[in-house]
Image 1 (cartoon, rainbow, N blue to C red):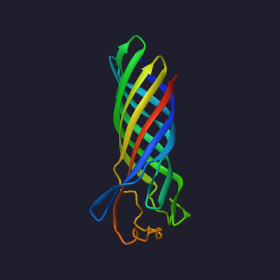
Image 2: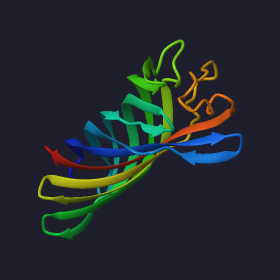
Image 3: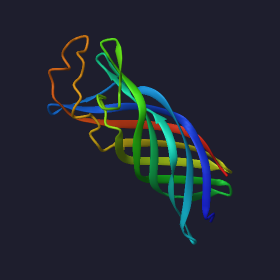
Length: 192
C-alpha cells in the first residue's frame, strides 16, 4: 500500500441550516455552493489499507428562510479515517468517516433587502464551526468520485447578534436556540 497519497478535489455542495427557535426545529431552504481541497492520506499500518486523511479546503455554504439569505465561506480542515477496499485491479471503494473544523473567512446575510457582514464583531455567525463527516468514494486508476455529508455540531449563531427585521416582521420576536449547518457534497478528485 502507498504510504502517502496526495490529492486534489473539487465539486458542488447543497447546504442548509438546521435552526432551533424556542424548541421548534426548522430547516432553511437549500443553497448550491462549491468546494475544493488539497488532501493528504497517510497509511496507518503497512499491511492494512487504513488511512488517516487530512488536508485543507475551501467551501461555500448557506441557506435561506423567509427573506433571510445566508452565504458564508469557510476554510475547512478535515480529520478522517478511510479504508481502501479493492474491487478490481484498478478500482477501489473508499468509505471515510471523521470530523472537520472550519473557520469563517467571509460572507453576507441578507435581511429586508440589505446585505450585512456575516462574521466579525457585529456579525450573525461565529467564525468557528465543527462537525462530523461521512463520505464514500470510488476510485478508478487515479480519478476519484466522492459523495459526502457534513453535519455541524456547534451552534454558530453569535450571542451578540440581533436579527434586523425581516419583511414579514415575525423572525425578530423569537429566541434562536440553535443554528447548525448541514451539507451534502459531490466531487471529483485526482491523486498524485
